[in-house]
Length: 399
Image (tube, rainbow, N blue to C red):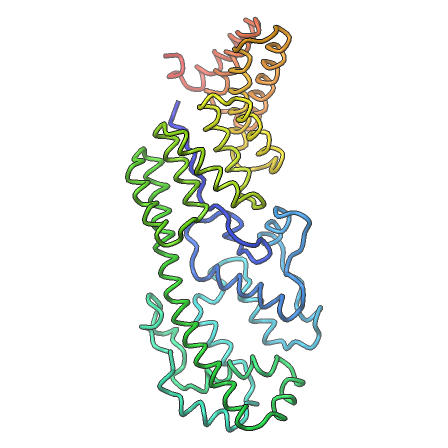
């Protein structure tokens, strides 16, 4: 049988209410556009007081991010302008290519739509702060020069004015009643803060790209059998984000493949604590089941396999969970126990193998394992039929 692929790319981290569709799908090569979607979902909440997609379960919310359009913000808050609603809609586009491609492009759009209601004194003060203008491609590594912010600091001022004005006429009225010094100081302070934020975002994005690259390389190396190099890549990822649960999961898998089951168990147990209430929990339960089964803790393995099925009965590659639990049941039946207990465990193993085959009907190994279980139960004819089927699907299993 071909080598079993344990690595599951795209482990989910974060609140499901603000996850991008690609995060919900478990895509590994996330970029700034995913953050723009999450920011759009956050902005949606800020202007409506509601999350874009509600639900009673994480999976329900994730499916809505993938398949449904959010309710137009103006239906919830009629005071919102058409422009801000359009910007939110673009930020939360399902396809990454349809969103703003980077934060600078988003800021340009915000600057262009804000009306020229900003107080003249603020405009003059912002012209005096031109040295603080962060709009150069060098501030955002990797961004194309055409996406840079306009050189005039007035563009940044308009963005700050939008924040102060509260996106409505009431905010304009409140602003005009403030003392002139305060109307100058507030946008100036926000402008300096914006510079700091842009620089911080650029650095964080670079660190995230490095982290994702190390994680991707570690997963690929582990699948190819180079566990030592995979662990070295994970050490580099750990330096960027210490304690990250995805690092723990991949470390657990690499150590399991090297036969270091005790280390693998500790890594996966820590990861499960972090992922307990996330959509990634069933996957970690499955991996822990594999480790415990190989350690000989068959009852513990069955518990984790069962938890994976209970938490997410339609998780990807669920047939592997049923296969793992069936193997554990069959091994438990081979231990000392009454004939009644052995027969009960073998029936459970047979049921799980049958469930796995229904989900992966072309897998020769599953038919072979079920055939061995039929032999244990004394059902020779059924065993021969399954073994023959396995050989037809993959002649190498007969060797």
